[in-house]
Amino acid sequence: MSQENVEIVRRGYEAYARGDVAVMLADVDQAMITHREEPDGATFNGRDGLLQAIAEWVEDFDEFAATAEELIDANDRQVVVHVHQTATGSQSGAPIEGDFWFVHTLRDSKVTRLDMFASRGRALEAAGLAE
Image 1 (cartoon, rainbow, N blue to C red):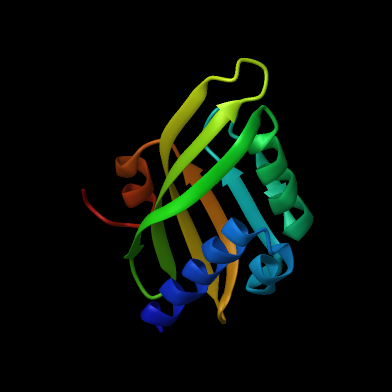
Image 2: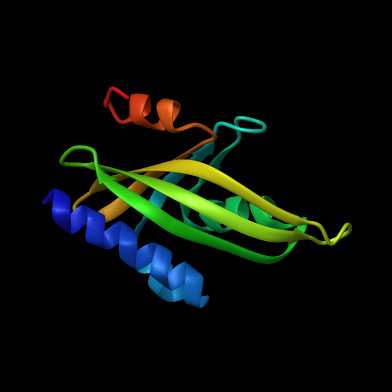
């Protein structure tokens, strides 16, 4: 099951990179919870909440890209993803890069929760893994 979960999560990132929102959402539970630790501890509900969280995340950037650099099979229900993000500031034009770690929780082949972290250690801890 856990390798299947890794493939489900990978498929979502690939769909996002292509701009294929329908495929990205196909493996997302309708009651999904999205939580971002930084900068504000915000929580979003459902598929619309996921889309809102993404929109808020990228609203100040042009040419935004997020690449899943590493997918870690944490356990039989969680996948930790190291995401490298590149963008251009929409006002400044400055190039911006950052690394974040997302913990995807799955049940019945659907993503039921996404937790966004600014550090690898916090993400691994949330998934019950020691760094």
